[in-house]
Image 1 (spheres, rainbow, N blue to C red):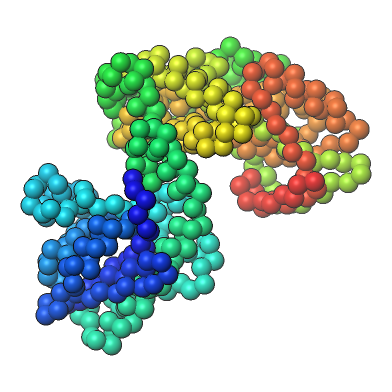
Image 2 (tube, rainbow, N blue to C red):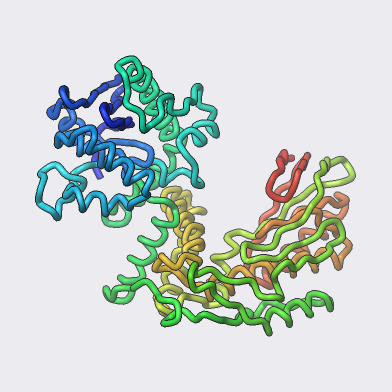
Length: 473
């Protein structure tokens, strides 16, 4: 990592014309590249050597193109490579190897490994194109490609494309500034963990890199390899119930018995868990909503509606703090191919994260929060070294059953929830029962050793469980 200035950039590639637009310190630098007039090498070299180039999907596309432009590849050659990357979806690393643009090939002094770049696409939430992300942050102008990519361009069309490229650079810069806190966190984490460059890494990528690194250190440097289905990942498994899961009413006792006696299988092609009959499409009728189970968590099936607090009635949400991490620690769980080093490391991260939070050590706390929250998704990816479908199964089912235990407790005392989602319940009840309700939650927290945290709302308006807005009281 470096302290170079940030230069935001984008490129447009056509058979007979290419351009690169760079914005540094609020000033645009525009270079066009044609057969008769190639882009100036000295200018391109200066930006590549003296700035941090920031783009959108640039590490899979634009970084390759700027090197090709610098090394005087023709526009036709650049266009052909562009089609390999975009249309044929050829992996960027294979294209780089074929063009000998990496350090290993020893072909070019200025190569892909000598660039200092940031790709904001990996850090943004979800998967979308630049224009959709721009729409989400309400950028002032959004424009689709004005000239078909496979068309030979005229001089007049090239002027239009230069302006179009300027706008895309503006969107990229605005997106970067919108999530600047995410980049600051990644830079800080990189300094914490031996200078690892995490600036262009997604949350799950960071979690995997750092968890694996810490566990390997705990194993005296023994490398942790990606597990293989059928070798150290079983293709069928049973739910391993932790000690605290138990119910009082018959319908939930029956559910627990069916889950414990069910067999869950893997889709060996995708590596994903297949829901067993005990869970698949399982819906429970609660007093004021229905509850649906699934690998992703317990969710309420609700009708659109609006609820308002009053002098007589309160709306309160209770949610578990770090539900899945606490379930993993409280049940002494870990991926088998990691061994106990994972449990010890994970437990330390969870405990020290809470200490950092209470002590006001924001960077340390947020770093560990990212590792804990983002690692969970990797348990379901067969391409990850954190792949652990048995741990995923145990954790998600235990999370749903723990939430159902809480719902059972409050409903047995005459409280009715109107929605629930993965790690929380929300209900409306008479204010003269606040102390009674909080005692139920406090006792339950102690029983399962997972903290519950509450918030009151004055308004709660929802279309469904995932589309709502609430106003804090």
